Structures are given as C-alpha cells and as structure tokens.
Length: 230
Image (cartoon, rainbow, N blue to C red; front, side, top):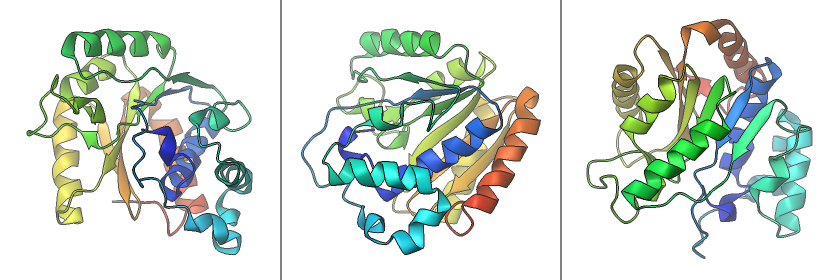
C-alpha cells in the first residue's frame, strides 16, 4: 500500500468491504503494509469520483470522504483511521522493510499491535509472494509471504489479503491461489472476493463463520455488480 493510491477505485471497494465486516461486530486489524510513495502515476484510477450518480450510492459517507481527500490532494490512510468509518478497528502503519531480520521485527510488532483483532487485513502493494521475489530481496516489501500468513493464522485470526491480478486467466488464477492459500490455513474456509481490478482472499476461522457469512451477504447486497464471490 502506498498513500499515493489513497482514494482510487480500488480503495473505495476495499474500505467498503472492510466496513461491512466491521458492521458485524468483528474487531478488525488493518496492517497497511505501507511502502514509500514513488512518484509514479499509479493511483490515478479516480474517474469514479467524477461520476457520483453511478458510484456514490454504494456508500455515500465513504464516497464523500475519499472525494474530499483526493480533491484536496490529501491522499493518506489517516482519513479512514477513524471510528466513524471503520469502527472496532486497529491499525498498524509502519513501513515494510526489505531486509529479512528487520522484516521479522516488523511482523512481530504488527501482530502484537493487532493481537485483539478477530479479522486481520493485509494490504501489500502487489499481493502474496511470487517465486521470483524471495523474502529479503529488494522489493520484497511489496509482498506478503506464506510463512507470515501462517504466523497470523495460528493466532486464531481470520484473514483478508489484497491481491493484484497478474496477466493470467483470472478464473484459473483465483482458483489456483485459493487452493494454495487453503493449504496454509488448516481448518479454514477460503473465499475469494473479486472486483474488476483486484481480488481479496478471505480465510475464515471456524469461530468466525457466523459473522463472516453475514458480512459476505452484506457485501453481495451493498456492492452488487462491483464485488462478487466465486
């Protein structure tokens, strides 16, 4: 996650999704996995903010908040770190390091800060690890690694992980990665929450099935046509 992305269409759907989970009473822990802004053009997917007649009705309060931040050139996650937008939510905002020992310290601090959360949301720049970018290499800060997912899972938290689509057949990709995730979260149910640009992989702990089922139903209703499950 980079603050330069704040308020784009992916953010609107992301925060809308998290707000549905928070509505069920689940305590949310948001690990932003922040990396420094780089001045690139990423994060310019903001045309939806010029079409309130098409987009505002999904979540008017959230839409107006993001619109104001983008208009004022104040693109920063602090604008949603408020109980009015994400109730019962804790946040961890330290930048993700590349160096492996520093990364281990970073993860320990994140899990400690978010220890009371029922549902942990990880928001890496790109998504889950890929073979060409092993942990500790330059640029590894943009990925969440399988061993980190396992460490979060054994703490009995349900998980959501942000994932960009690679240039592959999307249906096959979602199916393959969902199956792979299931092997790292024993006893969990894996549900992909799919949008036009990205997918969120939800791993549900058995003790959270009722609340998470309610949230998924709420998402399907409130965000019909924009977020769907498979």
